[in-house]
Length: 151
Length: 263
Image (cartoon, rainbow over all chains, first blue to last red):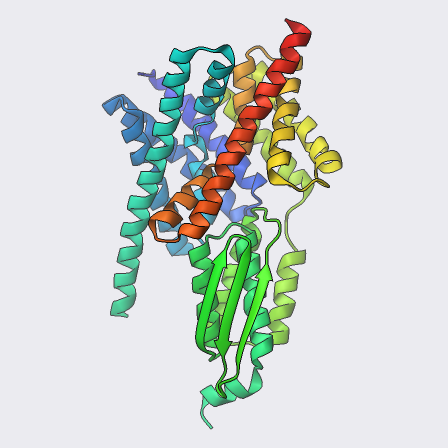
């Protein structure tokens, strides 16, 4: 699972454009569209980097979901907007659309090997995203509650 | 007379609860998570000096009970029917609720602002259509398709979009909607590849699957469960799993249907 640098760069650009498209479709404010797109690009870049280093889809999903959560939490804190405004577009490139499709397709083809492989991969990605999200949101909320207590 | 008593005298509890419910339903309908909605409701109640606010919310219902300074207790509920994510409304409502928590404005003014937010949404069909087209095209290339595939994915989005407005919107059942949309997408993708626009069926379909996939809902719901909110978590997990299954079912149906016609 190693990509060339040019391929990875191309994918990051496409993730950026795709996230911008989703920000438009979810009807974000004009000033939030670019932020969402950059978030999508950054998190996909981190995913690819991590995939090259560890070769594990699960770990990469955890790391990139955490990165995207921290990115959105940072902006939501600064600009005083709900976190979902930034998180919804920037998590999009990591969602396992390809895995879901190939799982269905191998089910149709009656190909048990592929079905197991792609189904497992889809499950790993989803679980990784959820775990990364939960870890970060618990830690972040803990720090915010600490800050409130001091004030 | 201190300010607390003044506030309690000016604002009647019935009207305050109405404002609270309206704000909460706008937040919940447009993609806020349940914990945030409950938190906002309690803050607004405190700002208007209501005593003992008790709130409960799931994705389709909001309940609130509070008492005023004289001990009069009231409960109001609001049923939420269909929700579509609209980040602009979410952000503006959130800003408004921050504002009225800082200094409680008159209720007429708040109601006027809420109606304004609801009506002045940027949500136009053209904007959403362009967004979906950009997303579908770039994701079909993202997963390894070429320009032809991206073009086909964009065309399918257009077909979907008009089908969505004129045919599917009246039947506002989410599962049924996802199923019929996936059938339509599958059939048009196979058709487009057969007449020569687009090369890889899989890349085109993946680009369009990304528009339907309930990723955000799934992540939110499992987080809800881990935070101890089992009712909301279960509702959302069930609905997003059913959505994923109906995408799968729709594609299966399309393959079976078109496979018989073309191969």
